[in-house]
Image 1: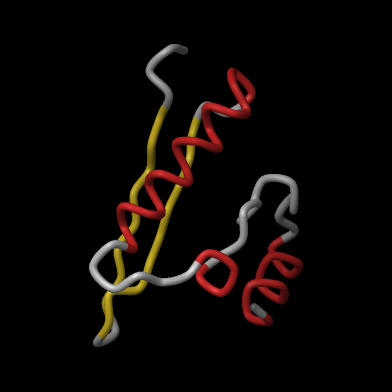
Image 2 (image 1 turned 180 degrees about the horizontal axis):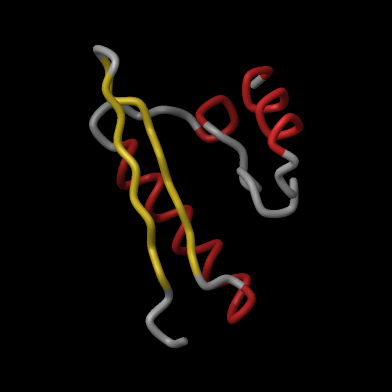
Length: 77
């Protein structure tokens, strides 16, 4: 959590748009289901925000120094 707080402040990110539902500490890190949990949370948040939210991004660690990320765009723009 401290790394996120430092990085988001240093980069000047808007806290109302970044990690709004919490990360792995708040939501958990279910082995084998992290991607599905991230996608479901992101899509629900994009739906909740409506037309004000065109893009969403998720990222996660995979282990052994690897990671994955995805960008989603609403189809109704």
